[in-house]
Image 1 (cartoon, rainbow over the protein chains, first blue to last red):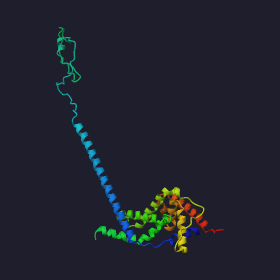
Image 2: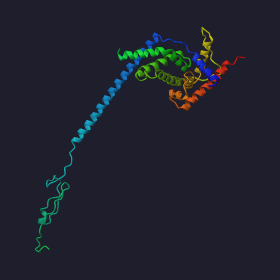
Image 3: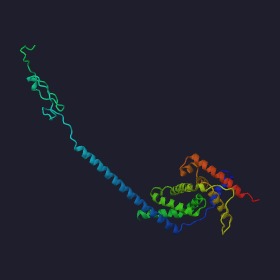
Length: 125
Length: 170
């Protein structure tokens, strides 16, 4: 520190006055602390209420989305000849053997063709 | 004794013991504005009350000093456009007791009031509180280089103002 800086520091220290802590200062500080405590309490209460409300809304949304997911029918795999009736399919009639074929609709799986011997008189080779 | 009363007693004893020194610091930080100094100090002590469980045992004065310095540097920024250096010093207020000490204090406060708030805060922390530059930066919440620059510019301006003040009038 140069001479000026030392002098500056000295001036700042020497300029101090003795100011006692009076009752009016104490009272004013107490009032300020109480006021700050009240505003902090109100702020915390508001924050808590908002948090609870937000949680409640979130839970309601979650519950409604779960409820909607339970009523949707899941597709079942078809495991037997049982079939869901579909729109009628018109097919040209050809032979008696073929007339017995079940109608193929998009909702059913095609059944394997049963073996039927030919009726033309010629032995099958 | 309930904990609340114990805490209140410790806090009250600290404030009573350090009130004068802290008020002087606040007054330097505000450039001699006594009312603003009291307001700043009260705000800082209210914050200290709520932080007392954490800082009361360790360094309550350092905490108050940091709160005071940051508030002083921040609050006067809004009036920065109103603060500008002048070539001639303002006339000091008439004092009933015109002692040399009062004159010197008045002149010092008038000089400090002419500095921008952050420069004034840096100068007071560095030269009145005798804090190293690293700590000045930590209190102000800025890099060390910025604190060094603020201090240097503040001292340079004070050097100019005070040298003009002591020049004999021709």
